[in-house]
Image 1 (cartoon, one colour):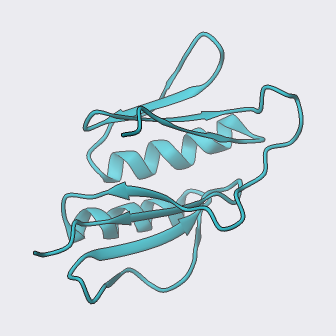
Image 2 (image 1 turned 30 degrees about the vertical axis):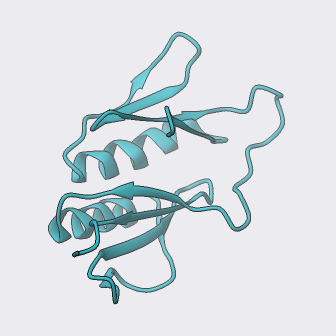
Length: 124
């Protein structure tokens, strides 16, 4: 359904440190900077992009919004969480944990306050 997710940042250098580390923990590659200065991450057919807002106003995070990212294993979720907290992210909600549906999930806020979740697919 989605072609990409784009979020805003007030400090692209700081965002690149955080997202390079967290996507590497999931087995992805470091971000590339396009001609417009946006960070672009590709992984398993999806694109995640970070940019300064084009209207020139400060970037803000979505109140009530969460961006969910799939992980292949519990180890990837734990590595993502560790990489994120070591590179400017803030742990939120609960420590990485298994949910009643069998998925293993972790939550962070990135350095700009965007709420992220990484989880394994639920056991069916």
